[in-house]
Every structure is written in C-alpha cells, then in structure tokens.
Image 1 (cartoon, rainbow, N blue to C red):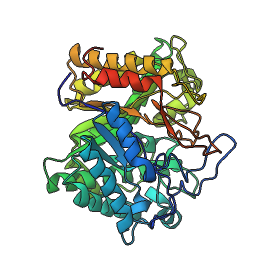
Image 2 (cartoon, helix red, strand yellow):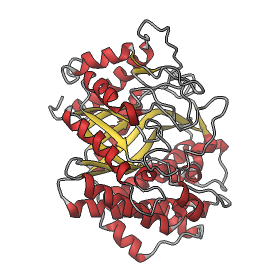
Image 3 (cartoon, one colour):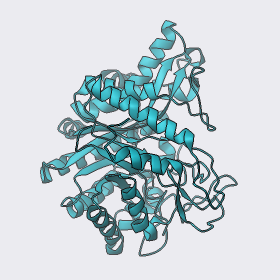
Image 4 (tube, rainbow, N blue to C red):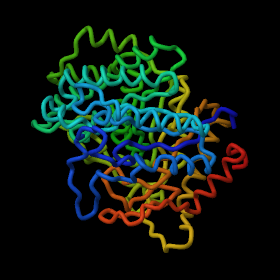
Length: 454
C-alpha cells in the first residue's frame, strides 16, 4: 500500500458534537428536531465537544491517520450570515490542533445538512441565492482561518442527494410544494456554491485540495431486458455522472441539460453561473458507499423524472446478504465504482464513508464481538485493493463512517457503525463511556502494517 495512504474516520458535526446551546452556538434545523420512539434528539450526540481528546486517542490507537470532520455553520456563525462566533471557531482550532499533534490529518467538510435555523426560516435554505452567498462567505472565512493547517476539503456531503426527494429535508427547505423545479433549483444552487468555493480555495493556495462528493449506491438492472438496462443508464446519468461531469469538466450532462430545457423547469441558470462552474475543478472524487440495489423498469412511468427512478423502482438484490435495515452488502460493487470512476475521469478517487450499521448491546464487561462488521470492512478493503492493484486505480484513502458510535443519519443510536461502543441509547445517556469492540483491535492490527497483510 502507498506510504501516504489515508486510513480514517468520517463524521458530521450534529452526529458527534452535542453542545447544541453553549459557547454562542446558534440553532440549526437539527437542533429543533424532536426525538421519536425510535430516534434520539440531536442535542448531545456523543458529546465530542467535550470528549474530543479521548476520541482522538482512540482513533490514534487504531492506527488511523485521517479524521474527516464537519464544521457546524451555526456554531461559527449563529445566524448563518451575521457576525462570526469566536468561541465556535476556537473549538475547531482546538480540535484541528489536537489532531495534528497526534499525527492525524484533518479533512474538513463544510456542509452536512444542518442549515442554520435562521436561514431556513428566512430564506428557505438553499432555494435562495442569498443562502448561497451566505454559505460562500462562511466557507471563505473557514478556508482563510484553517488553510495553514488543513489541506483537504469537501464542500457538500453527498451532493447528488440534492437531486432526490431528500433535497427538501437536507437543504434547509421548510415551506413550499416540493416541486421538481424547486428540486433542480436547490441542486443548481449547491453546484454554484461549490464552484465558487473551489475557485476561491485554488486561488488562495494551489497546495490545497478540494473534492466533490457523491453518495454512491451501486445500481444493477433487474434483468437483461432492455428497459431495465436503459433505466439504470438514465439513473446513472442523472444521479452520478451529471455531478461528476460538473466536478471534473465544468458542465452539466447533455442529457440532464436537455431534460431541464425540454421539461421547461423553472430554474434560473444564468450565463454568469455557467462561467463560474466552467472554471471550477476538483482535485479528487470523493464518495460514500454502503450498498447496492436493483432497478425494475416495470415500476416506472413517463411522469417520473430519471433522477427519482431509484425512489420508485429499486429492489434488494436476491443474490446478496443484507443487514437488519435492508442494506445489501456488496464489496464487488464497491470495486466496480472505484474502477469506473477512475477509468472515466482519471482523477484520484477517495471513498470517504463506508461501513455497516448493526444493533449491539454491551454486557458491561466483554468487548462486543462484532464479527459481521469485521467481515464487512475486510471484504470492502480487499475489493478496494483489487481496484488498486488489479485495475490500476489511484485511491487516496479509505475512511470508515462513524467508527466511534454516533446516532445514524435518522438519529437512531441503536444503528451503530462504530468499532468503539458508546454507552448511550436513544433516550438514555447512561455513562457515555467509550468501549472498544473486537473490530477496533482488528483495525489496529491491520493498520500497523498499512493494510499490507490483507
């Protein structure tokens, strides 16, 4: 394995930090989301705001050398577009500096769905160009402040999700009819913001690296029927290839652009926007990968936009094992995506999220024997190495998701991804102790020799 390969952990601010109402932090849309019978609220998470030293020690003990964090926009700018909060910035100073002292390379993601509540209420989130301007202002401030210590950056987490129905949940959108035109407007605004930030970062320091990130789910046709194959191709173009074309080549996919114009979608895309996008570039292609699915074209109609095909016509693959949450386990699909991305775009690729959610309990004494998690990571790392050494792919690193237990994306603390157990439930904080699982020691042993023995 390359000597400079990154092995690491990825998280978001709202799933880790807690400290939702101290040191000048403003409210985000997550801070006011209530708990349910199966999910926690977002006010404590795993309290990394106060426990980051212990958590970094655990990551270091696993022999990880990168930690991808997210800066909470509302922690450093309580209203999203007002005065910056010195105490919030100082927290990230402490966190980044502690990483560097321990030999852990920081990566910063600037937006992971937690829109400042003020901007959500006043501007309806990213449907407004005022929000775009406020986000770019925030991003420039963070780049100016941290660029001397942080070389790797992401703008948006899983940016292709803004062209799905999830767009209205993750963009700060609070009111409206959730139309297709609004969805494409939100997507375009995130693209414009990304391009402006990427251009600023490269102009500031050409040693800084910024990636574009997608949420990749491998998609197979249900059968060799031409309609199934066609549906997969169109979904691939709208959900993945279009965004990567923008990241790498600075333009919308021809097919997606034709769809916008042919359907007369009400999306304001100016010549100035297109010039900004055309001059932007990324240094690597980042993505999350957890699973794959199958597409059945017989469930589709002409009224369904191609970017929404998976929401209507996806099924589980009967040839694959799946988790309790019906997420299929497909390491070969991981290799296929790595290789296809590199073959097409010739840019380094970087899987920055990978893992499996399991329901686990701790008996108060013994390490949790999470053998299924070990098998999942082992098989996916093997698939990645096959992409590198058989297919010739340049991979920058491998980051697991939530390797210290955090609430899932829906707020479920019982869907655990970690190699370290955090002693809390959805409604009980309990001791909040960190207890390494069997997979912790597996990773520690594997990475002592940079993964070469796998």
